[in-house]
Length: 57
Image 1 (cartoon, rainbow, N blue to C red):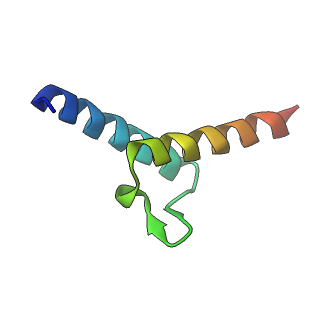
Image 2 (image 1 turned 180 degrees about the vertical axis):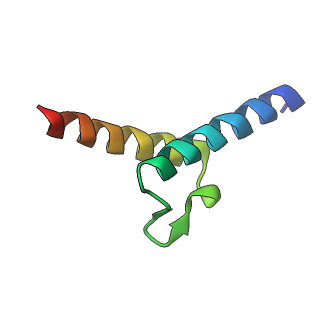
């Protein structure tokens, strides 16, 4: 894996972690956000934002 690709993954994970923290999410079950994979963070963020969006209407 190239250095640039690893850095891009790290940046995306940090972005998602920060967004989840802003929404009041600090853990998924007993696992801290920083321990999750990028895919797990994306799934959690999507689930939370979809839930927020559908509850607005």
